[in-house]
Image 1 (cartoon, rainbow, N blue to C red):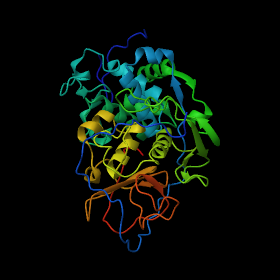
Image 2 (image 1 turned 90 degrees about the horizontal axis):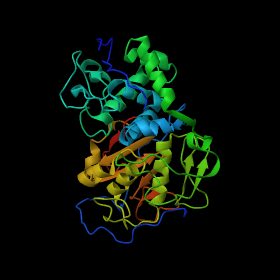
Image 3 (image 1 turned 180 degrees about the horizontal axis):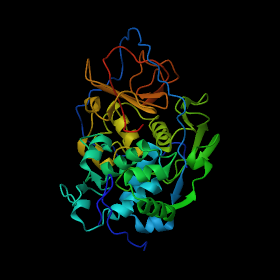
Image 4 (image 1 turned 45 degrees about the vertical axis):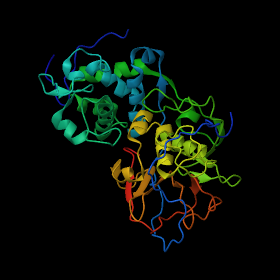
Length: 400
């Protein structure tokens, strides 16, 4: 193997060989937790003038479905990671998969540097995407936002590769971005070849951007344990779309948020997940597992949305049982382009999430002027300013 020109050392290339809202489980979890989320606020003072706006120019992500060759050759976990990372950073998942193939055969290469924590090759490259330490220190990201990036971790490595491609010119110029990843024309050709092998039929307009009116949504990628957005229930049912990048509350049903057609699919999935919770009362039955619960509190509401859209794996959520206070330092700092999480520990623990400009929150008294203002539980709240009763930690999921 020849020494890399920039980021990586390539190994030998191998040959290619329903109801509107779903029914919920009737049995609640019998686990009580110590989460303290605001249900009612006796009084709320003046409001901060912070709008839940979205920057202009944020569009939907199109792309292609995996080809039969991709499904046959790429391990399912890696395929989901390529698709999620591509959607998160707005780059072609098939190009990421091409890099993963050339580098470490999607983690299957016997070279210890591909998978063994701490092992590096003769050039100092490591992990399934073969990053040099110096490059990873600049472009490495934690896919789940729960710890420092690890170049041997497949999720971190793949998301970091997407981040690096984006910073190097993708999606405007993939040849330039791939060449920056490794300064070799043969390498660019090999990656593009594998990308073409893995890239199947183009996603339909409904899949890529959404359409006005109603569509049937199915098969949105889910969490990293193999679940999909619709796997828990056979069919999500009609999904009401609206043109643009902002979610809007239906004029006919205050429990339905219209899904913005020009938002990325992961954001669309979050809006639909929020719709699924609208009939539930406030309660702690969603801990540690928010799926199928008979009630949800503030943190389990956020947990459910992040799980259902594939941003956090359900195994991680069940194991960690994140509470409101755990979101104070989760994710990246500052408001997100599409999604922002507000968390606080004083005067009491609370967390809520803003998705495409619409707030999903269990707190309502004095913080909602919409049709759900008298209702407990996870509801869409109409108030475009942040209440001042707490000092908020403002965070967002990586890339969103």
